[in-house]
Amino acid sequence: MAFERITHTIDADAPGTTTQLTLFRIGPADAAAKIYLQAALHADEQPGIMVLHHLLPLLKAADETGELSARFTIFPMVNPLGMNQRVFEDHIGRYDFRSGTNFNRRWPDLFAAVDTKVAQNLTDDPAANVAMIREAVRDWLDTQRPTTAMQKLRHLVMTQAYDADYVLDLHCDNEALVHLFVTPDSMAELGELADHMGSVAQLTAEDSGGGSFDEVWPSLWTRLRQAHPNKPIPFSARAATLEYRGQPDVFDEIGKDDAARLFAFFQAKGFAAGTPPEVEAAPASSPLSATEMLRVDKAGLLAYRVELGDHVEKGQPIADLIALDGPDAFTARTPILAGTSGRVISRNIAKFVVPGNSIAKIVGTEPLAGREGYLLED
Ligand SMILES: [Zn+2]
Image 1: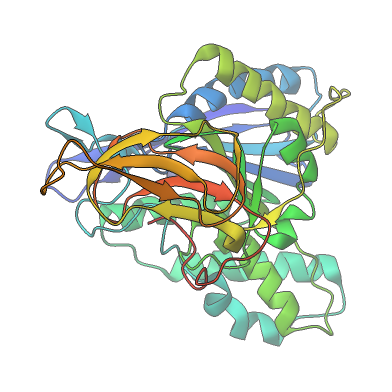
Image 2: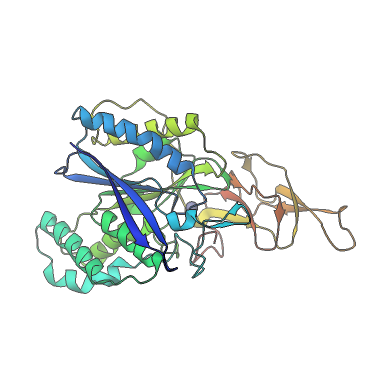
């Protein structure tokens, strides 16, 4: 049994400045399974902090009565660098100010990092292969020399996540219903997560093109399995991005319920004692390439015609864009039409938009033309 709080101090880039990163370890240190959770990697997305605030005491209580059979590593606020991005009283939090890197993109390609070494050491023993592959990742991490504050933070985070069986990355959208981003191999083992979360959509992609945190872990195992089909390599890192509604949806009541639902998922998987409540099955997953990120090509003021959760038909107006310049300024309204049929799961909280802004995610079922390569919003 353990409930440990560990705070690391990272040197920031400016002289004389540091940042602190706190993690919790809960559960039996010798448990076979490890579950890793983090929130606010996009620092402007705080519903996950509230969820983990309410999950910590649930796990602590279960641990004290010996009811956990997994060890948990939890970063409730994994990106203190992003928390420090306040500009003229607005919090930013999504991109590293120094490099412009989206905090949830361009995480390292672990397959490229370790495959050569792994290939030489694979055996016919599946458990030994899992241990050897994780050791290879650990060895690779040990050779890295992170320089900038962001690199140091990423490196520290990876040294805590590399051996996890489950990696859950808590985010949120702008204004949205609960949904998941997940790789197909992970989805095959995370059905109960979607069910207990009450997820309305599970958007799957093998590679969304962004090197997002939740993809690099399962991708390692999926690609090793493809590269070495004659060796037993169990798929060993299930991961997902959990989208907990929209940025303003930070309330005790919701966070407490979401934490209880996560705990129920751990019960369903046998990592916590007790029987989870019965819940309705989440809808079937759909390829991320079938989800339209509907964008505007002009600036204007949005007047939505649909609500979250609405089913829309291709060609149906999602919103009107009220012109703010030109001869028809403040009088003309241009309808923005859905490019596919499906369910609206997110909208833009900002109603003043500029060219290229996304105004809705519409979850369809058929992959859309042109939705290839980079599948994410930004
Ligand atoms: Zn995010």
